[in-house]
Amino acid sequence: MTPVLVDTHSHIQMDRFDDDRQAAIARAAEASVGYVVVCGDDPETCASALALARAHNGILPTVGYHPHEAAQIGEAELAQLRTWSEDPAVRAIGEIGLDYYREISPPEVQARVLDAQLDLAIERGLPVLVHSRAAEDAIAAHLSRYAEASPLRGSGREVGIMHCFGGTLEQAERYVEMGFLISLACTVTYPKNEEARRVASGISLEKLVIETDSPFLPPQEHRGKRNEPAFVSAAAHAIAGVRGISFDEVAAATTANALRLFAIDAEHRVVLA
Image (cartoon, rainbow, N blue to C red; front, side, top):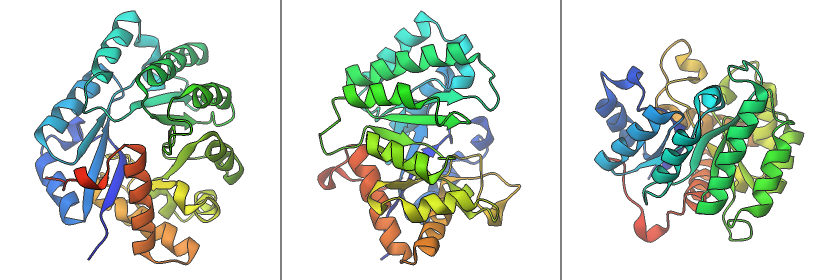
C-alpha cells in the first residue's frame, strides 16, 4: 500500500487552475496525496483558500499576507486576517515572511507586516508558513522572537515550516533548533540544486516535510510546465535517493511530521476528495 503524502504548500486556488482544479485534486488523490495545504498570500487568495476547503475534504487552508503584498497591507487587512484566523478550518498563518530577492515591498514594510502576523500567530496558537528568499539570516531575529513566545513551543508540535527552503544546511539547522520544520519543494530534483540535496541528507528526517508550491517550481521531469499537488512525490523520491532509504520511509516520516504540525490526529484523518 502506497503511503499517504501531504503537500504542505500549494496555491491551487489561483487562476492557473481554473480550467481543471477539480481534475487536479482528483489526480492528487490518485497519486496518494491525502492532504493539500492551500496557502493564502493576499486577501483574495485567503478567501478562496477557505472556500476551497469548504468544498473538499483533505484541503487544509492557511491565511496570511506574502511579503510582496506588504505595502498594500494596512489595519483593515490585518483586521480581516484576524477574523479569518478564527475560522476552525484554518491550520496556520501563512504565507508570510521576507523577500529581499525582489523587494517588491520595502524591507522595513515587509518586517512590520511580518511581525504583526507573527503576533497574531502567537495569539491564536497557530504555526506559521514562512517565505524567506535571500533573507534567511535577516529573518532569524523575527522568527526567534516568535518561536520563543509561541504557545506551541514545548507542546510536541513545531512552531512552523520554513517553506521551499532555499538556504544552506547550516541555516536550516538553525531553524530546526528554533522549532521549525524544513520543507523541500520539487526544486530538490533540479540537477544544479546541490545545496537542497545537502539539506535533504543532513537534516533529521523527523524535521522534514515536502511541498509543490503549485503552480510554481515543477519537478525536473516537468520543467516548463505547471506544477500540481500530484507531483509532490518527486520531492520524496529525491530525498530518499540522497539519504539512501526507501520512498515509503520518507513518505511516512514527512506525512507524520506534517500532520503533527497541522494538529491532525489519527482519529480525524480523511482522504482528499
